[in-house]
Image (tube, rainbow, N blue to C red):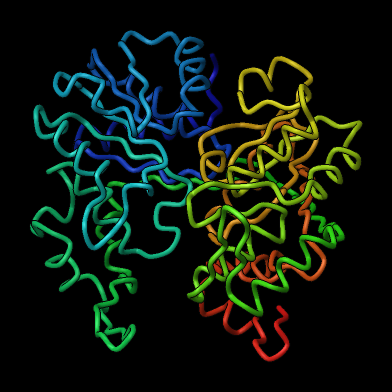
Length: 413
């Protein structure tokens, strides 16, 4: 295993920061090798047991990197949801991959509390990894570093006290009630984090990445089109056994998002594939390519699996070692994995989140592969193109956007 020159430099600098402060944030962009770099830093420390916490789909690739590096410490790799299965004590280093997922506020998430409990037992070195440390707000930094007492905001026992100093608090009025908006974090947060942080971009790594985005349109099945029209008009569709209800703006937005791509989730919690138009289109259009497909709703995988049959898997190892295509849910597949074996990425649907857009579309990039082709499959007259216009501007698509796009007088988007 040979590190790139910039990785070697970061390893040396990172080890010095970690020894001095016991906390290091590697804010390295996608495909610059932050996972391997963090393992290399641990090799520079006198440690025996390292816990690497990541997303489930990334576990195998991290274990492969560890085997290739063959360092003189023991590594345990676990996903965030399985933290209760590992020892709660005895770790010399804890690495948190995609650390921005710990940044919920104003209250810490369940996973953040779980990691803080483990760290409190011994106070190990902590390395945080993310290509996008604060994708939506600087305020997301507090609970990421709150897990260790060796953080620059330790004088603030909770987010609310931290916000009094580091957030421009605003009031918002929702349904007649006033609430605090903590999203406007101050630049002072990044200033405080600077001594703990090493940032590195794809450009600095010599990755002049070109991403070619293509939008293709599918004509919706007429029966599904009629159902969408009825839902917009009546806000409810009643079947023999199931009901589709859109009695709020949020539910109407969500149901239309599902139905324009050919699936729907009923009030009962059951879901159904309404049509296979998008799946058929993808199968035909990319029949001579090895593709990675991102989908939004679980029923969309059922539609894809029905059309692709044995030509499709959701297992990363099987995708890498066979000629099968892969389909992954956007949120679970957007981080921590490589899809470099794919000829292109195809989006069956699009997520409301700008973070999903920016992270998922860069899954094929490597040092040797700097031109990527991705394809968005939208329904003519659907909601997807409206969502796309928001997320490319780094804005989440919200109810406010939907209300602006949706014309109730004509029931059109």
